Picture 1 (cartoon, rainbow, N blue to C red):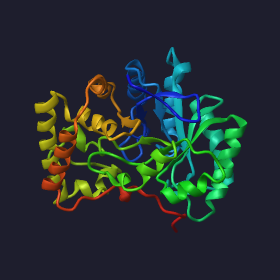
Picture 2: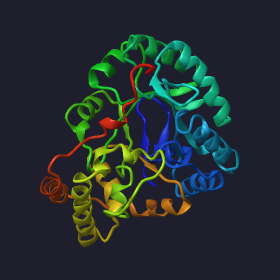
Picture 3: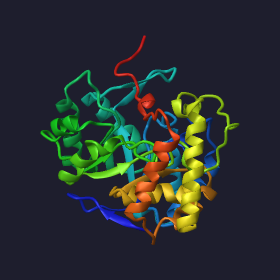
Picture 4: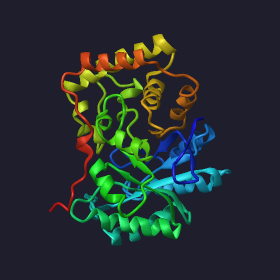
Length: 331
């Protein structure tokens, strides 16, 4: 396993973080608690020591499963926890942004209980709340940091201007934006800003919601509340274009490195200078490819060929904008 020291902290974390949105069940078609716990354990056995979750992932379900999984794991004291705050929801699960101090102070207590711990290593603001000053959110996070309840502060889905404003009130150690071969928007501004200011990138969506596993085809369908039903990439004519790109990327990976497209996709993120990539899963077997990602690299020619494939196959690329929650409670 590869590891990264987060500047401004004493945290040394694995460069692969286990993402647990899917095991929360919400927007992923439900969950299986026993299988989810086994998945967490499988990742930890591979050397992963950073588990990323959030209250909204299953409305407490993901955090609760992660807490149980670590309680049952022998070396849980060596595992670092990352969770989030500032999303709120109604009784019928309508999600909206809430960056108030009251929400932060309430939710930190709930997360500590569900995770069965007395401190959280990395605490993220999940989405910025434009209905209130950034300084209110940042000051509350600073309060938790000063108390030692959290050890590092992060923001997710923030722009550079929002991060700059946040940093006036609170140190910022990490930033969690979406990033993968198909969604490279952060290259324009967020990534350079973080690199200039010693803010560690811990990106999500490495496999672009399963596209980059190589296991989908044009007949793949999504049921229930699966978020891919809302993602324009999974609707025609784009779906066929993205699948064509995946096929070409798979052939490139196999011919150059004898690696799966999944391993290639995660390694690509590291080659682009991102220190930590979140990789989700719901089955223990999905953790097996972790061993494929270390001890090899790509050169500039391969990175250039990746871009050529995207330009050739995808006529109107789209980003992850569809995932943004409402800025206020929608009536």
